[in-house]
Every structure is written in C-alpha cells, then in structure tokens.
Image 1 (cartoon, helix red, strand yellow):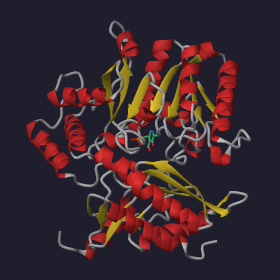
Image 2 (cartoon, helix red, strand yellow):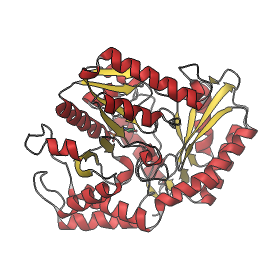
Image 3 (spheres, protein in one colour):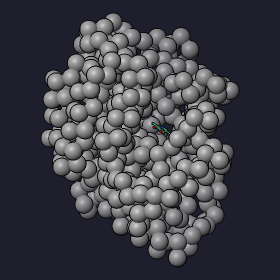
Length: 437
Ligand code: PLP
C-alpha cells in the first residue's frame, strides 16, 4: 500500500458528514482512521502504524488479515456468496460441527445469528419456550448487546434509555475489589454473592424464572474473573429451581482466556452458550447459540419461533471454518494462554508495583484489566478527564488502547508476540509515569 495522507483527511470528512456512530453524541466525534492491518498492528493511509491492544472491540482474536481466513472468504464468495437459511449448505454444517466439537458433551446443535446481541436474544427465547416461564435474571455489571431483550438484560448504563422489554430482573455478581457484600476474601465474595442470588430467586418466585444469563467472565464491565465456587454455585441454584443457565461467551470465548470457552476453566456446564466475536474474529458478522440436547430436542416437534435471513450466511460460515482450523493448527489459543501467563501477567504486576495509580490488575490469557485509582487506600476511580488524557498519550506513542470507565483493558489479539507485549508495556509504563492526577 502506498502511503497517501490525503485519504486520511477524506475519510475523516466523509465520516463526519455521513456516518452515524454507536453510543455517541455525534458532533464532537473524531474517529481514528484505520486503512489496513496485519496481525496485532493497524495503520492509517499515511502509513503510521499502531499496536492494536484493543483487538478492535475485543474480537479480532486471530489478528488482522490472517491469510487463511481471507482466502476462505474469497473462495466461498466465488463459489456461492449467499443462500437462504432454510437450505442446507456444506460450509454451514462444517462450521456448526466445529463449534459443537469444542463444546461440552451433550451440545450438538448451533443456531447462527448476525452477532452477539441476537445470539442472546435467541438464547433467551429458547429458555422461555423450553421452561414456559418468562423472567430472565442477569447482573448489573454486564453487557449483552443492543437488541430488545439483550439490552434490557444488560446491566450497565446502556440499558437505562432502552428499558422496554419486560421480564428482566438484575442482581449483583461478584467483584472482590469493589465488593457489594462487604467481603474481604474471594471465598467470602463468592459465598455472599451466591446467597444474594438465592435471595433474589426466592423473592422473584423460582417458578417464574426462565433463565439466568451471565457473561462467564464479565468483559466490558472489567474482566471480572469469577471467584472460586461462584459459577458452580450458580449452576446448582439454576438446576435446583429448573432455571436455564445461559453463559454469554461472546467476548470471553474462542481463545481470549487461553481456552476455547472461558467456562472450560471453571466447574460449570451451562444449558445454552452464546458466542460471536472471536469465533471468526469478526471478518464477517456472525454469532450464535450452542444448544444442549434437551433444549434442541424440545424443538423437534415444536416450531422454533425465531429466524434471520442471514442465519448461517456462507461467507461467515467459511470464515468460521478457516478461523477455527487455523487457530487449532497454529496453536493460537495456546499462544494466548502462554503469553498471558509468562508475559502480560508478570509485566502488568511489575507496572502495578511501580505505579501507585494502579489499584488492581486482573485477567488471564489476552484478557486483562488494569484498574486505575486516584487513591490506593480508598480505591476511588480516576476521573474521565484522566482517562481521556491516558488515551491521547497512548495513541500518540503508537498504541491503540481499549478503555472502559477507570480501566485500561489489555486485550491484544491471541496471536500477539512477547516482543509486541514488551513494546506495549513500555508504552503503558511511559504514560503511567506522567503526572496524570
Ligand atoms: N455479549 C457480550 C459479552 C459482549 O461483549 C457483546 C459485545 O461487546 C455482546 C454480547 C454483543 O455483541 P454484538 O455487538 O455482536 O451484538
């Protein structure tokens, strides 16, 4: 690609005039121009390159422009670019099989959607149909997508202006660093969070609750690793009351934690699994629900009341097959685990030693949060102004960050190398050394 700075200005102008952006007041936006990318790097038209430690929206797990995925999409496009959902198609069957093969025993069918929100939407629908109940319990610290039920299941601020769907109840999940339960140990946090959930279930009436919907590891809410016993305890409560457990693996699934599914690291098997993002690294929009046999069988003789024109779109399916095969053959999930354990984790711990502004570091694989505080003792979060400055300083040094509230999420692609981690850590170190507060 020949550098052409004029195209950066043209892109910015077209964007400002004609593109309406997500979750934003439009006037003051000045989006980052990206013209190309490869692996863990992206660049603009001028040719300035950035380390992508955001993986865009924490979805480009295989890295930018992996040639195996690009050529699979190209081949499928020349063979058959689109097909109706009611047909059978080889790429679709191959993609579904590869996903089911990575799920626990007893999960054999996949319903494909356009992304993560409608994956949750349809999982909720399945749970409601299967149980004949309507309520869905989810946590305040969560994001489940921007459609009807998914956005109301969402706990964060994005729910509030969109609260039209009915049958949603929220509760507090565990978050040891800022405990809602006055807990001082992870064990106490787990036990008390479970006690709280049980109280909510009993108070709502178990016979009215179709599902508990949880991100296995809440992502945008802060990479909140569940404390010991929590997910097993939720599973036990759900089973005891005939409630379906839906685990949202949209952000944490397909390699991000160094495992295929995040819940593989915990003592829990859900009834429904939702996925999107990392399954094909977003090269073509796609998501879906992996369905356990009893729920899939329930619809053998009953109509499933849901569908999408692009369910199982061939370009998305070909990209899933190639992405999963390549992640397996190139050891990309293992790379995420190793780089997290041997490089990102230790380097972030060293930064926390050095910089008082870091209150806590947590994560695994290529899924980490660095919590920034104005005061370590009170744990008061740093201000939005401080976060804005941090963002500008990181970008100025060639790092594209993912920031949420008072946190830097360190979320590079699963293919990130130790050298790229070292380069990023030097940039974080330099920025956190500035006089920020
Ligand atoms: N669930 C989780 C955990 C997510 O992080 C997201 C997106 O960030 C979604 C669901 C929604 O996915 P999508 O934006 O593809 O609809």
